[in-house]
Image 1 (cartoon, rainbow, N blue to C red):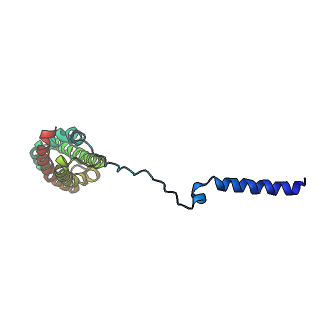
Image 2: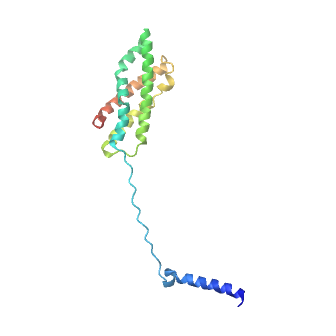
Image 3: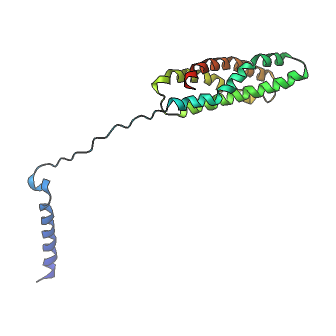
Length: 174
């Protein structure tokens, strides 16, 4: 038998057999495949405890700062050596409060969606933390006796009062 005729005949037979195995092509009906129905992915939700733990971590520092506001105000106008020391301490306390407010706000925002139970409280908390977090005391209080530092401290003194009022609303969760 001639080899040049055998190879094309084998290929033709193989193609014919493979076409016979296809049910859709042989019967003329379209095959329907059922794709699995995707299940909705639940939106992750953080627990109330996760939010409350961030508040609890910083609560005492903010309350302590608020308790010292009057002493700091008197020290800022005082002339005794102890007033200078108190003023420096107050400037450091304000800087710490602004940093912790920034950290807390960032950490609260990093959590998944808040449970409905605390969603409005979380919104209120962030609204009062943001002004304290945005305070520029860290930048301007390298000179604790400068007017810029006094202004930053005065602003923070007002802002922290709003923070501590919202902290009271967190008590049931702490």
